[in-house]
Length: 394
Ligand SMILES: [Ca+2]
Image (cartoon, rainbow, N blue to C red; front, side):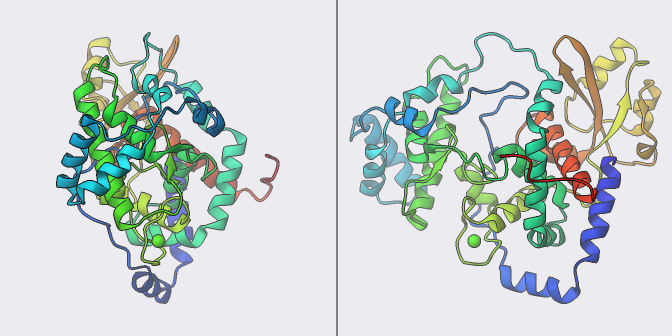
């Protein structure tokens, strides 16, 4: 099924399933609300475009690499003072929490750019996220959470398949939530960020800001056990950074708390709200097929220059001899010519719409966005196939 057809199918199917009374109930009961307003950040800042990160260590192996607690050093006190002022928190409370964190030196190499330039490879990247088991899990997740996905579609205009795609790529539907205590990972990256990184100061400031939001959230909504997440501080089914939780996460089940780890409803609503906040347009496709084999090299370079920012009309692309699929011909919004490398093989191309660009606000990579789209599409297709079997994966 083409993406446009899939969107249309999903829209029609889910819209027909909803009665007006249900919508009224949803709007009243869920009390959808953003937590607080703060500047946006990437939901998952640590991932590179199409390279595969090292697997996180097991929690047992990780504990073995944890050092002693930071303690109340001069650096800890100075950072705590800044965070306390920034988030209006008691300085003694902030100092205590950072001082009790343990340095995770094993994560420091993971935030450095790769030592040698790795060739991007869309084919390999796609294969990593579109395996049978991830699609099966997606079908089960969609079936189990159909009503919540409906609600998110009605309220935020984001069809289920894109939320299913994000949660599948991010955490395999909650199976891989991350094993690093967030207080440890964020304190380590705030206090020990590797100076050899080309943007060390900027990145360290980024993590200090994330640590500040994390501590604020812990003060407002304390966890009984230490919250865990990725080595870069992202957490929950959608792997939001703390500042993204502050700005975009919603209490979608109406229990008065935002919990992206234990509440699937909050995770679904928050992804939809994130897309909406970045300008998701209901019923707009994400991309069209495009063939650029007849485009002159100079023209191709010019068309690729804006990267993933939609900049070209259909007519302009056609004037440069790009051949768009038929469903793009009546499209009247700007498009980006997106190039995806395939290691030594010829690159793949798609014409990305403004909605494709919105998905890259979640993770600034066209490879990521297309994997999300294609996983969601594969799950949607499997869902409509009566002969599709689930339960063959461990
Ligand atoms: Ca909730």
